[in-house]
Length: 217
Length: 217
Image 1 (spheres, rainbow over the protein chains, first blue to last red):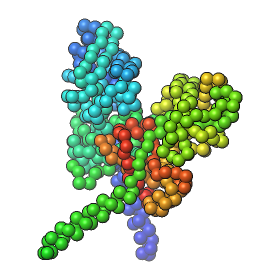
Image 2: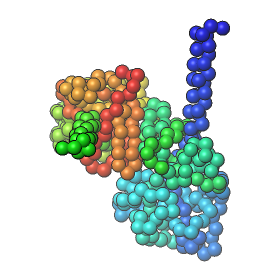
Image 3: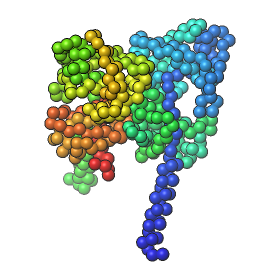
Image 4: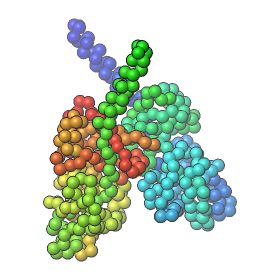
């Protein structure tokens, strides 16, 4: 075998290895439409005393489910009907919308990580048995990736770190500030909202490529 | 003056020069909400024989204007009211919507450059004096930048080339495939649709940074 052949083979092997490396950085994408998380007390205020959520379908994150129950959310300018409640019930009630939704409602929710609702925007929730005015709880969700500690090790990232996610397709988009959330209860998945999905013309099952941001940890 | 001071000054000068270089690649952003361009014949079918568009406001692109006239556009699943007509009247009628809009209408318009409507999606236009079913004309606009030949020379890009545009802010996004359109009639400006604007949480006047895509011309 001459040197040229060896060179060709080595290049081919290196190219396949590098293709393999890229594949390790692949993150499945999922679109989060507007939804609510509710506390048990707020659920009972909306649906009646003693009411509990009923499961419509399991979500991809283990233990989480889409409930059969939906509510109307209302702001000073408009309302959105049939907003799905996700279960199980949580400690605090939280409503996550896209910016397009927020314009329709006439409110200015901040961009926040799930659970961080102190000082967020007010929202009215309307259920079949009552309605609630929440002084805070409405947010636009910080784009994030759920992953296990093993995934994080594989990507070389840590909980709380921001990374970039490159999405290809007809209208390729790179999301420049995506929060890494690590828990053994999670399943690897990036959540984008409907604005992000529609801006990048996401179609069905797609994956993004995780890119570390240099100089930021 | 000692060497350390010289070093400090040189670093400062280099840093300012490099900041200046980045500024050269700055492109003002503008959000294009859903809108229509209409042919004179279609305008008369919608508004009555002999009707001509009336100007509400000049647009940033020279000679283009927002008309006072609005129409309803309708698809199999829903409709959108008060869709602005942009003037002057064109050779062909064309309706540009976001993907969010298209989901509401229940149609699947292709991503196209303005003017390229052959085989695009059908749409119904409803005016005060009549309505029209167009077999084609509905598109999602290919993200693009208008610029003059002088701008193009400055950026080192050509008409028809694709570039990346990086947008900063709270939710930074890089648009990966942005068409460069060059004409002496244009004014430098990148047009994004409302989905792209809302995905990147654009607020008022902002600029993006043009980045050449290596290996693509």
